[in-house]
Length: 382
Image (cartoon, rainbow, N blue to C red; front, side, top):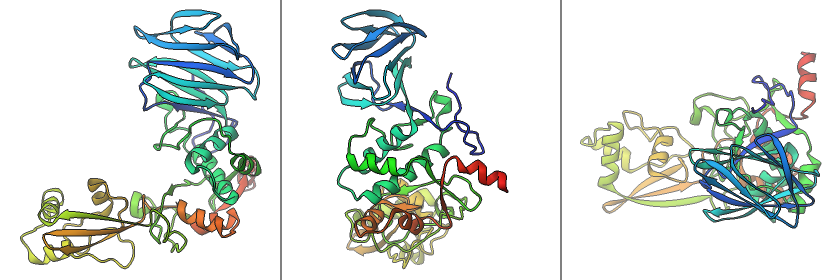
C-alpha cells in the first residue's frame, strides 16, 4: 500500500521519499533490468527470492496477465509483484524497454513492477533530492547557468511536495511526464548535482507559509499572467509581471495562417458569435491587443482566449489577428499558459548573472525561500 507522505494541508510528515509512476506512456510488455553499483535484492510477491548481480540481467515480461522473470541465476512465473532493491544507496537500476523498444534509463532508489490493464505498472521509490536532480536534468537539459539549475531545483522540489496527492488513486504520487514533471531518472550533469545539493530541502512558500504552486511555462512573450486569468482562482504570488528577458528567446514569437471562412465558422459554431454582423466580423478579423487579455476583443458572446488556444493548438493565448486576402495571419507571442516562471526569461537572467533568489522574486510575488523543516516551526509560531 502506498504511504501518504504529505498531509493534505501541507504539513511535512515525511518528505524523504517520492513514489513516481514511470513509463506511463509506453505500454510496456517486456523489459530488461541491470544492476549497477552493487547487487540488487529481488522480492517476488513480498518474499526475497534472490539477488541480481552486476554481471547478470533480468528480463521481465507480462505473460497472461502476470509477471514472468528470468535471469542467469533464477526464474519466476506468474508473479503479481516484483520489487527490486539495490543493496547500497549509491546503487542504480538500468532499465531498457524490450517490447516496445525504449532506450535505457538509469534510476536511483528501488522499483516495484505490477500488471495493470495488461501492461507493466512501474513505480520508482526514490529519495526526494535524487528525484529533484533527475527532474532538473530532464526539464532543463545541459549547458544552463548554475543559478538557473538552482532555481529549477527549488521550484521542482516545491511542485513535487504540493502535488504528492495528484496520482494517489493510481498507486503512486506523481508521474514522470509533462502532466506532473518530466523525470527520466538518475541525474549525471555535474552542475545539476551541485545546484540540487546547494539548495537541499529549500522550498518556496507564500506569505502564509504555505508551499506555493510553482507553475512554469516555456516563454511568456514579454508578460506573465495572473493565475485567475487562466485557472479562475487567484493566488497572491501568481500575478502578472512584465518580462523583458524572454523576448528574444527561441519561443518568444510564433505565426499561424488560417482561412478566414474557417475561422469565422469556428467562432459561430463553437462560441455562438453572429458572423452575419459586420461589426462582429471586424472584431474577429482585426485584433491587436496592447497586453495580455482574457477574451477576444469586443466579440459577444465572450470568446475566452485560453479556449481558442486549446481548440487551435496555438503555442499561447497571446496573439494578434490581421487579414491577408482570404486568410488571416495570427502573430503570437510566447509558448505555454504564461503563469508563474518563464523558463526562457529565467535562463536569460541567470546568464546575465542574477542570483536564483532574484529570479525567483521576479516571477513570484511576496514569496519566501525556507528550509522544509521550518514550515511547521513558523506555523507553530503563529
